[in-house]
Length: 168
Image (cartoon, rainbow, N blue to C red; front, side, top):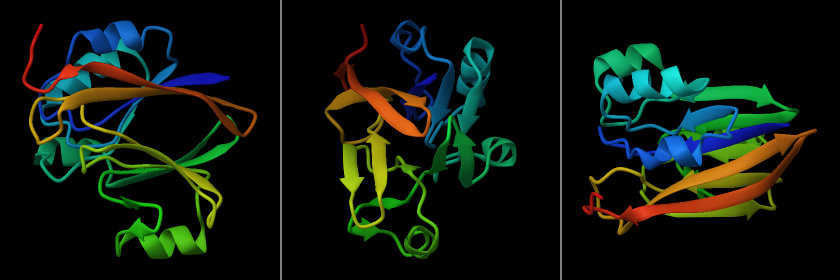
């Protein structure tokens, strides 16, 4: 079993509570719009780290991480991308790939809207962890934790870090 800490849209701000909430996680995944390579370095020093770049990320981050990351973890086919849409509204770029070869777990960021939705048509779980940075229109900063075990996605938790713009 692997416990995963998932975040997105840090936009150059990393709340120190991330380290507390992800302490028991085996890996940290970031769904793009990292914003600063300092965040990459902090998270890589803390736990094994996987990420994709987002639309606001600079060339250094784009050279370090792909636009799409597809891999298997604990028997689960995972696809992470920053801009992907969501069930019934996948974007033009991701829709054909989902139709031809759907993953079991599809993760994206970008919208700053927390969503965890089953897509029965393609037999996948879609997760957008929302945004955990302060930049954007979201009201609450969020993270997601879950576990992967023997081909199953389980124990999904939403964590609220506090309101956007409020630093404690």
